[in-house]
Amino acid sequence: MKLEEMVSDRQKFANLVKENAEPDLAAMGLDIISFNVQNFVDGNEVIENLGIDNIVKIKKAAAIARAESERDIKVAQASADKESNDAAVAAQTEIAKKQNELAIKKSELQMEADTKKAMADAAYDIQKEEQRKTIEVATANADIAKQEREIELKQKEVAVTEQSLEAEVKKKAEANKYAAQQQAEAQLYQRQKEAEARQFEAQRQAEAQKAEAEAMRYAKEQEAAGIRAVGEAEASAIQAKGIAEAEAMEKKAEAYAKYNKAAVAEMMIKVLPDIAAKVAEPLGQIDKITIIGGGDGENGVGKVAGNVPVVMAKVFESMKEATGIDLSEIINADSYDAKVNRNVNVTGLDGVNLVVNADTDKNGEKTEN
Image (tube, rainbow, N blue to C red):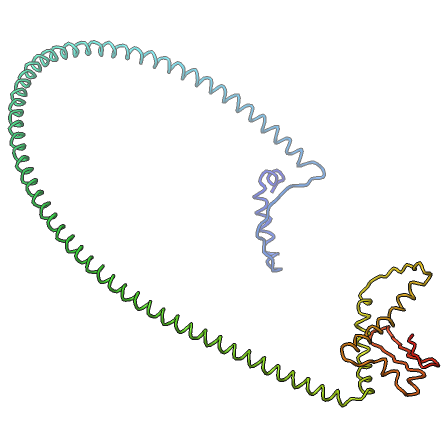
């Protein structure tokens, strides 16, 4: 292919390249699915110059063809305008002739139509008058027949109304009679049922009153029995408690009679810690004590501590009055230890150690510290 053909017909060039390359590529196991020539690259600008020459030739041929076409168009347009004008004149002339003939024909037809219309109008008026008379006669006959039919219809309606009223009155009378019978039977049935209900209610009330009386009697009997049982139980309990307390007191008296003074003193001394604890308990509940010295010059702390022996002495006196036993007398026994030094240690509270020193002087008189 020449260079001009390659550039101008790229598809043909691509097909030839594909046909020549397919056998070689097929031998290598390759297939050409699509092959297109995108562009030609020319370092010497031969293809570009070739394109310019082709463009100039194409533009020149196009200009000549355009000029010839415009000339032919103008000639054809002038010829067409002349033919069109001639045709228009001939057509307008023919149209004028036809319009003139049409107007003459219309006049003739209008005259003929008017004549026929006048004749038709006259005939129509005559026929219309005859038809009017016929209609009036027929209307009068129809009115008479209508009135006769209306009279006959009213007579039948009156007869039907009379029959309907008679049937309605009869039906209403029978209905009232039946309703009265049904009402009487219903009232009788209601009175019977009311009487039966009153009788049943009276019987039920009597039975209920009887059952209530029986229940009240049984309840009262049970209440009396319960009160009696409670009283007997309480009496028995009081009696048993009294007997037990008497026996216990008797046994305690017998036991106390057997005790000597030393045993009694031992028993009394055993309870001294509890007594001291009870005496000190109010002091233990005091959160804070503010001690102010007295006017006699004695220390306030010493006065608080000095109250303990006084309280214990009061306790001894109370025990003597309650039991007849003088603990101080027992302490002042004829033993040498009691005459010389008798220490009674009482401990019952945390941090409280009460020591009662019962000393005797040379004259045998007791002093307590």
